[in-house]
Image (cartoon, rainbow, N blue to C red):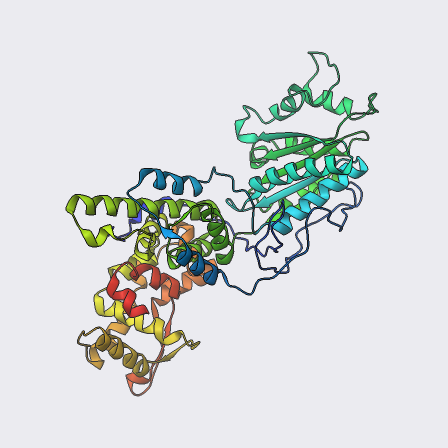
Amino acid sequence: MPSLAVSRSVEESLTPQKRRLRSNSTAAPETPISAPTKRKSPRRCLESSPSSHPTVSTRNDSIGPVSNSSKSLAEELSEDFSKKLNWNPSDASQVSAVKEALHVSTSPPTIVCREEEQRRVFDFCKACVEKEQSGSLYVCGCPGTGKSLSMEKVSNQLIKWARDGGFEPPEVLSINCTALTSSSQIFGKIVDNGYVKVKTSGTIAPLQHLQNVYSQKQQSSSSKMLLIIVDELDYLITKDRAVLHDLFMLTTLPFSRCILIGIANAIDLADRFLPKLQSLNCKPLVVTYRAYSKDQILRILQERLMVLPHVVFHPQALELCARKVAAASGDMRKALSVCRSAVEVLEAEVRDSTNNMDSDTQGNSVVKIDHMAAALSKAFRTPVIDTIQSLPQHQQIILCSAVKFFRGGKKDTIVGELNKSYVETCKSRMIPPVGISEFLSMCRVLNDQASNITHPLTQLSFPAFFLIKTSDQNFYSLLLQGLVKLGQSRGDDKLKRVTLTVDEADINFALQGVRFFRNCLQ
């Protein structure tokens, strides 16, 4: 099995990530804008300017009522696992199909876990088309949260709705700002594509031409609405703020027929630029895409794998991937990349076993926890996990014992009780436990492990922050405390309070690649 050793050079090459957003998406039944089986009450993420936007109707003509399911994701995955046949990782065509299903460029037939966000965008665009009124909307969120994919689905659904309802379908223009040679070229893209059907002199600038067109009444009564989807809007924010302001101001002109949707990863644009846009009377509505949760990542992976006729992943392997990616960033693209990497780990293992004629390994036809752990180890490298993996065996057993002991809900205990759990773990694995004095010494070492993992906050990679689910300041405090925290005791050392200061998921992730520790943690 591939080693879980961690390279610090990779960790140092990563940069800190901004504050994450946690997704609280709602759910709906499978429709053109589909839904998972659970519904949560979302935090309202829309801000509106009453002077510049049409009222968004709360009635939804294309999305049906919500249904609830009593089955959990784990139960559904287990049922799917038992119904399908295992795949053959030696079959090149099957491996190719799996990788294609998990590729970020593969557009799934349905989009789950983003129903509420899509509903808001769809209702906004629908209101603009119904009233033939311009408007602007800003979609923001961390990378890999489904923003661009959702806009593609919403635009298709909007055109279908307009045709079915007897409205003139809007023209749709999608622009990726990273493909522009200059930020001002975005106005030329709108004019050059022929969406503004008015003759112009070659000497007039594209922006001025658009402003002239939308400042006077259109001669043609059949002039269509224009839906402009501008992706990677961060490029305009960093290069030329004036271009950003001019772009949004197009929707405020008296005869404008533009519906502008800007998409960006800059979650703080509302604080930095919206006040200026509001002063120009062109403040857009804001829809925030929050980072995916563990259950949402698991649901999306499940939906993608449903198209395959075979079982590829063990349910626990998928859950491990979803849990770690959600804790680190909530980036669905990262989850897909990790799953593809886990398939490659299994593929290499089967290839090696074929060369070595190892019949036991050849029987491994699904991606299991150890394969996923190896893939995650390549994707996420943190000093905490590196330190846990480098500990002596008995110190690792103490951490496993602490994890099992605190699963009941306790936050701390005394050294004597933790020692009992440690002795039971050793005896169950037929390993001689150390005496109480040496056990106390090892607890002190774990308490002092901060010297091996302490880094300035500016040098820590973002997975190191979020894998233990805490704020920057608390994370630094955790490093200073070590892997466990020993309290003070005036008398017997066995009465000292002991607390586990690292997340259980980090210990599981660091040690589950070794069968011995997987058994200890069960």
